[in-house]
Length: 263
Image (cartoon, rainbow, N blue to C red):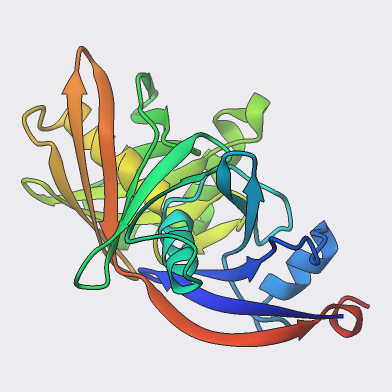
């Protein structure tokens, strides 16, 4: 069976997008793993299904390991652009993710901004911070992100924090100057470093606010694949009105033969 798809990326975080409103595509771990493989598949950090529920559009996100996962910030921004391209929503829209309802907006420069879930709990664990920004994230501040062995250190953190709930994503963050961060992220489910991570950018900006600069509510986050901006409000130690903004690109469209490629 041929399944049509679109390939998108947000700051280098790449996704296979499928319009699944008719439920033709039945997700399975093996099929999604094969589709996300480089060289033998399409190649992506994850796969996103555009579906509908009783309230409206629904985003379902699967990591490249084939498992359905928690919210993906850059994936959500790509989802918004995909839905807009399909003429399903206006430039300002709402859709459901696994964590909550989200607002998004297509900006005049082609960037997409996405409203994230509120955050009320930031834990200090050893020499870092742990929080849920739609997905679980551990944030470690370092002197120079270029010197971090992300594959090794990231995997150790991924396997040792939040173990009872499947582990965590690991972010290594360098404060470049006031309000400007450099970040590298090891993603749970991808099990490797990715070029960008939206929920990781949000988590790192919140941790920066907690630890370094409590007056800074607008933070620029430089990832390997591009620059993201995070803004938020703080009221009584609760982070709300959290917005993630950055570039989105529609790379190409295609069809995938599931029967042939999943043998």
